[in-house]
Length: 428
Image (cartoon, rainbow, N blue to C red; front, side, top):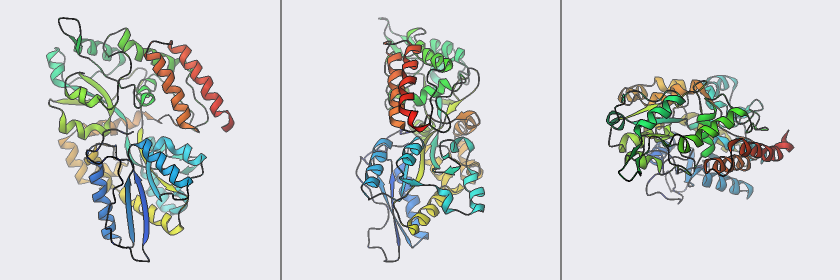
C-alpha cells in the first residue's frame, strides 16, 4: 500500500550513490522505488543502497523515486514496454499477475541455488508469499510489507469512561465502544467520530479487514476467479454501511485514506484503521498515548496482507539479473530488514529479522510493532487477479455505491461479480 508521503521529495527522480562515471566492468542497475511510503523510507533506502555499493564495488545502483505505487507501476511498465525497463522495481504485491500477464518479469527461482531457495526464499512469512508466488514460482520478494491494524486514542477512551488498554476485539465491541466514543456538540454535530475506516484510496484493502474475519475470500489463489457475491462478502459490505447509517459511529460517504492519520492526531476520530506502515508516523506525531491492536474478529481473526515486493524485470542482461538478485538478497537479510522495519513501521518480512538485537531492542521500546507481525498468523492474501486494476476498480465502485446508499449490498456485489467474471473468463 501507498501509505504516508515522504516530505519534500515530490515525484522527481533521485539518484542514490556516486554520480561519477562507472568503471567499464561495473554492473549498472536501475531500481524503481515508490516514494509515497511510510516514515523515513527514502532516507533509509538511500543509506542502505549506499552501504551496499560501498561494499560491492562492481555494482552501481541508481534508485529512481517514482511517486506513489500507482505512479511507480505505470512508469516501470511503460519503460519496460519501451525497451528501457529497470532491472528492479518495488511495486505492489498485487501487481504480480499483471506483470506476469505482460511478460515483463522473470522468477527469482532461476537465479538462486537450491540451498538459497530453502534458506532465503523459504525464510519469508508464508502469509506474504501468498501474493508473491504463482504456478510454483517466486515472482516477487517481500520487502515493504504490511497489514492493516487498528489504532486507538487512549486519552479518548479514558474520557469516555472506557478501559484505555482494551481495544475492540469483536464486531460487537467495535460498535458499542465506538458509540461511547462518538461526541456531538450542542447543535448535534459530531465533533469526534468513534471510528474511521478509509473507503477512498484502497477501499478493497480495508474492506478485506471486514471480509476475512467474516470468513470470506475475495479471489482465488490463481488470480482467475472472484467471489464478490458470496453472502459473507455481502454481509461485510452491509456492516461497513451500517457503521455509518445504522450505528452512527463513522462518517457517512467516502472517507479519505491520506487524511486519516491527521484526523486521528487532531482528535476527530478516536479509532482508525490504517496500515502498520503508518506506525512510525503515529509514534512521532500522535499527541496522546495510543494503542495498536489486531482488527476485530467476527467468525475469526483476520486481515489482508499488503505492501510491496521486489520484482526482477526480464529486459536486462544476465549479469544485471544476477547482480540484482544479490542486492535483493542483501537488503532483505535480517539486519537490513530490521533497519527498514524500524525506520518505517512496515513488517520485517522474515522471522529471523525479529531475532536481531536491533529489532528486539526496538520492540521493547515500541511493543506495538509486534501487533502486525502477530496478526500474520491470521492473514490472507490481498485481492489480486489477472487484469487486477480492472477487477479492483469493479469492486471499489460497487463498494462505493453501497457506502453512498445508492445500491443495496447484495445487488451491488452480484453486479460486480458478473462484471469480474466477464473480465477473467479468458484466463480460466
